[in-house]
Image (cartoon, rainbow over all chains, first blue to last red; front, side, top):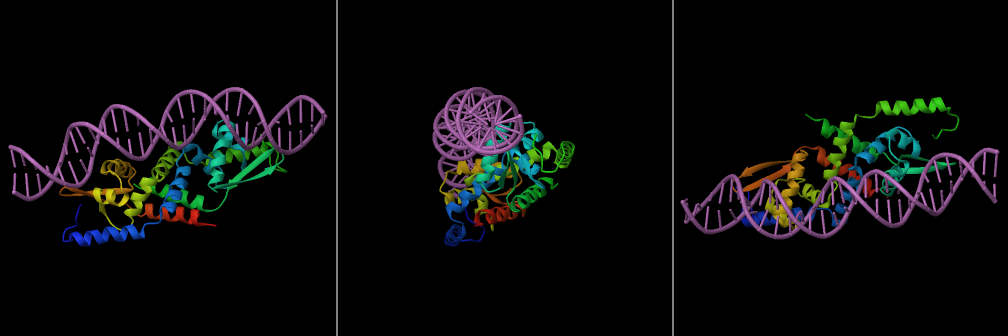
Length: 117
Length: 117
DNA sequence: TCATCATGTGAACATTTATTCATATGTTGA
DNA sequence: TCAACATATGAATAAATGTTCACATGATGA
């Protein structure tokens, strides 16, 4: 049980208790981790980046990334489940686009971090 | 090769080429995915959340999360490698804190997304 | 110096996960 | 209806990853 300099054992226990109280509930933390897990894959990052400004079909994305359409489709399913992309069918093609602006915002913050220093 | 309504094959090829040109380089996309991978684990999310407002020792965090100090230490190493937390040694204890404000910003954007709807 | 406590680390194990392959579904034009 | 194409999906395989365990390292106070 570590203590701060000049902090009694009771004060420390109270500090820990305060932190415990202000932590979001487990479900929220789980959902948050699940969301970031979706961002944590190179293929999905590349897909989201391709969709940054315009909608694209599955085969467009597959060509762009040099990957099998099947692999892209699997990943798009995960992105859609996380509500990061939405899809629209037009004839034989399915067009995907970013679902809301959060993706772009999270991307920007992530870029700021890795570009720092 | 899918096409937009009213878009010729050449126009479509040019569109794809424009996207390819404005995509960040592979290294950046890889680093971005690696960064979000660190956010994509419940334990690490809980750790970052605990450190949101104040620094804590390894055993504080272990107590708070009800986990083995060893497990926490392993995860803190990943967080530090990603420059998301920094550490300070004080006697027997090692105190960890968020390294910069990006963590909080990315957290907030993630929360906005999952809380929507 | 030695015992004790806090933290760090390497190996092993179990679980998760991304891609591939084969195949199914759905759509168009003939 | 049938052939051709785009997309979706299930199973299998290989790779990545989180936790545990045992132990090492580092720091304190006696």
